Length: 276
Ligand SMILES: O=C(O)c1ccccc1NCC(=O)[C@H](O)[C@H](O)COP(=O)(O)O
Image 1: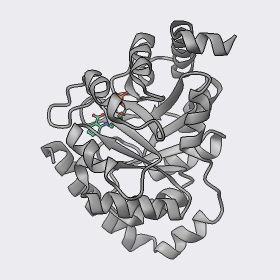
Image 2: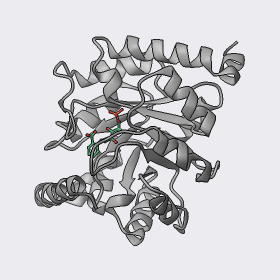
Image 3: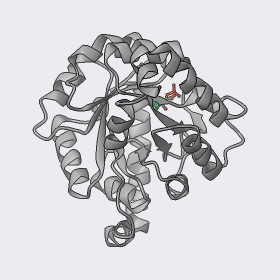
Image 4: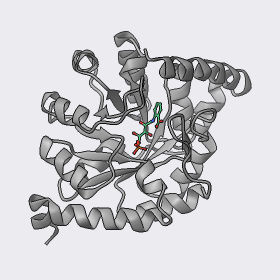
């Protein structure tokens, strides 16, 4: 595990321990029963069949960039993204490094009809029930932070409570471990951000794309900023594009997403035809 990831995971263990002491699982289960998950991966598949499926990320800050967006009204941003054509949302819930929160997940999810990923560093089953209790529709598992046994167990736990699972990889070796799991995730993401150096290379996705089976949703993550990036990734086989910082830095992230989608549709021939 990289030093950065090690540090984030260590802090996450402390957060989980504190949350467990404060809110019992029975209370999370009571809250979870109030809402039905909305099929995060299916929303991406459906959109991807007729246009670019963007997962718009609500990202206030990050370890690599510090504060990204000061003006951060979660409900407003979530609605703007939905109106502008996002297929799904990703909501960061880590507080110490990303200034996210479970409250943000709940507010964003309640404000829109599109499904929401709880974007966090999942290292304990408690967080999966927590995601469901706070209106999440899917969880993230990061292969670099988990053993194969943990990935399998967490995927099973999430599926048992109707949550979808996105497993994120950075290398071919991590992808091998994911492809060998007995219970497959609903989506596999390739993260272009190197967690040792924070350098971002779209080539990471482009190189691994061919090895991801077409029966899971293929997601390219990090460093996507232009329609040209989306065209390259789409041509390599990706179904969906997870975009955080490049939209968050715009004065009007919703308008920026609309423009990006319009440019992507006109640049990808097959999408242009299906949009006619
Ligand atoms: O963004 C970071 O600095 C970061 C650092 C350490 C672990 C994860 C990190 N980011 C999480 C993500 O995966 C991204 O937020 C997501 O893919 C969107 O990326 P971007 O469009 O480049 O903001």
